[in-house]
Length: 232
Image (cartoon, rainbow, N blue to C red):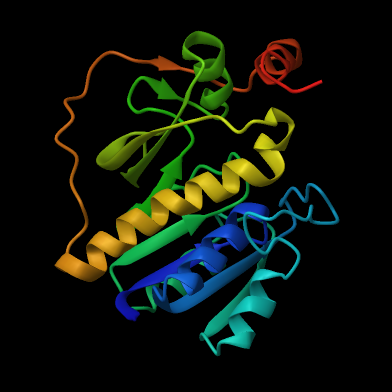
């Protein structure tokens, strides 16, 4: 099924590869894809890690070409450049699946062109905002949450769509490289399936409340979170 009012804005990453792979598996096809090749993009790892969860070895562009999904490549010094905003502005689609480089915060210019940006956050919102909330969640609750929401100019703040509690993987060493991208992709599929079936995005009835910002976790705490339940 082609989702005529939806496009994707992404950079090459395991998360983007998981998003595209699961969308294709579920026949939820975007009308267009913008692939941003940015000089600031962090490439880690250089060689994608193989996993049984999704096809992490074929690039996003290879996947798109295989099924003839229209796409364009925007080369830019920054994901927040005027070239990227201008490219996005020319499309009439109102909904955008966002999968930029890790830690990217969209500039105000993106929110001035009348688009809704769907983002999957690896934490429970609004309780766990920031860049590495799932490790704090593991330390405090021994669980992981994923939240789909519509971005606004503030960090991890916007209209909530879907929230799910997930069982951490048996091997927590896989979290960053394969499990997290796959888990986010499954939540994205829930959002897009609802949209395909009902003609509108899901809406969470959760009430906002006081929250903490959990920024980049200290390496020692991250190792404690990972190793606390890692098979030996």
